[in-house]
Length: 253
Image (cartoon, rainbow, N blue to C red; front, side, top):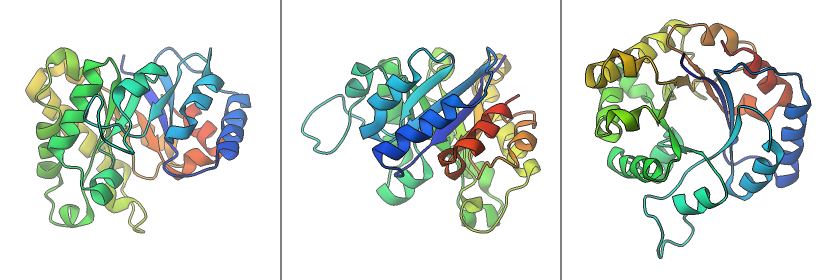
């Protein structure tokens, strides 16, 4: 059974005190996670240890870093290495987020190097992919996302690909006023799973969790998560509101 995952992406938001209070409020709320359900909090680097301490002993709840560098160590002022994350017990890292691609010019090759270094150090990458508006408008989203998968993930062995999580972000539907329908989400998730099946076989494709990152909210999570190939969400703004994120957690199938 595939893991169903509610992943919170705090991005560059909240002070330390606000983040601490948010976690307190979420953890105090009633949630009952099944064996196949995970909650992952992707928090800013200064809050990783605090979040680890808050989640200590909490079943099926984990902390993720929002990024890492593609080198193990060295003279890279301002970067954070996978060894640093590993040394404080981090088990997940978000890679290839659309904001990293757009604002920091991260390309598929660079992201593939980060994927490699994560897997070499037993940390699970949450690989983000998705198309911008101009690609969707020309109906070439499958080719665009297929290239992201091919260039960043499909060099991996079957054993390695099984250790990854994929998050699909329809960039054109985030903060643009346009809305992706549940059918559009399902179609792309099914396409991604199909591409994995072509490369690695159906058995592996059916084991990999594919999360939806297109403005998941408390009032639409259950409907989106009910789609066959949607295995939860990578949640931005709604993850900063305790009651909303709790609702999203409880919407997992």
